[in-house]
Length: 188
Image (cartoon, rainbow, N blue to C red; front, side, top):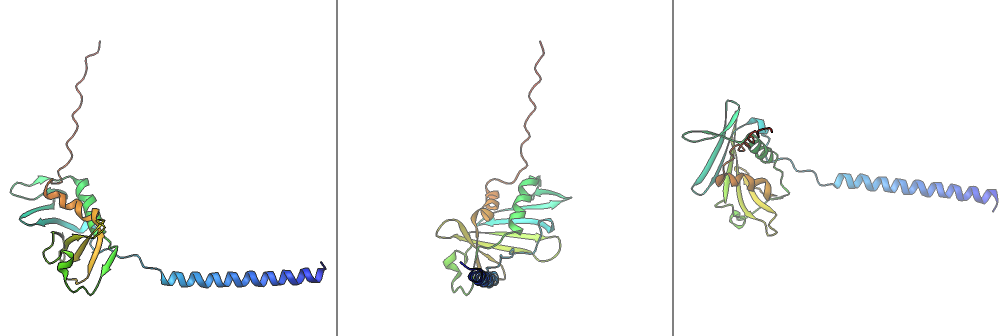
């Protein structure tokens, strides 16, 4: 092959490489603009802003509230609550992001939201409470339908994020029982 043919092939190769690079860059730009945005949390409340959490299901209810910077299970004689259990649950509830949003729903009863399975009320130190109305499981059993009071949209949220707090109705979030120290053994 002559020097002239090699030079022509090299120029063609550079032009083709540039064209492929340009087309790929255009494709990336289109893909980025068409990407599904990450959904925002359902509430702007931070866990540290929440003063109380109330769960209601039928005739059962429990309220956990902050008193003197400690969590207590409210009632006639308030009992201490497990700080870690409450904080973990609050972080899940305030950071709750939908996996899918259903707009223009004709009948909320189809999703178990006309008479919700249970409600979760987050009351901040200042401002309005946020009420989550929890409905039926989705057909796959991985999520639950949820509606925020005052919002017509129905959202699908991970089941584990809302069912953990429901368990408080059966087993309140008491602090862990301390492990007793083993008795000292006499030395020989």
